[in-house]
Length: 293
Figure (cartoon, rainbow, N blue to C red):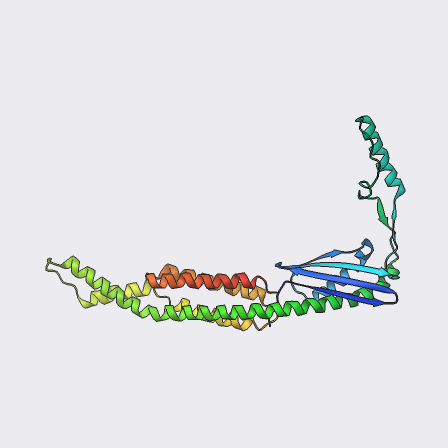
């Protein structure tokens, strides 16, 4: 069954006096994109993290928050006293030159770049945290997948209903086509009779048949209706696959294109109104499938 592209999941695992918490949030995106929020020391694990996420998520903008506490956490942060001294000297000089009082606290300075630095851990120390991080990541991915599948099921049901409505519109248009030709023939006969009234001229049934045939050829939408039915059938079938988003997007574009062609070829007001409803139904499908992976 189709899977939603959006969702969230959290995993919290503990081992050997250490705890790892992983939070995942995924929103719509045409491609896969990972944003990792963690201590700088865990940047070395990003390739492994991305590979693990890619194995279960094909596309979407993924935001991951990673927190490790306890014995497995990287070394603590420390103040760079030299950088802090430089900032303070600059601030003092600035205040003195502009004759303004210097601030009594340094709270505002502590957030400046370079003040709080992290002692880089060894690569071996980071490698040792990977099993714990991997377990937390798997737990978060499991929760994320449950949410994505539940939402995907709901989206698939709604889109299947939309496919049913499109089929009804196609059937209504197909049923209307024969009556359109009869009405065209009647209107053409009435117009010609009025034009020839009192002139003594006549026209043959052969001429009438030829004109009606030309109109029927220019307004023939049989091929478009067949393609619409084929596209809807493929759309419905693809909803059973796990990641059909891109294929469904292509089919939705084709459905819209066929509907536009019918609108341009048809000379009937009733069919034009049906096509407007058909295009509305197709647009609903396109909006919904943007949420599918």
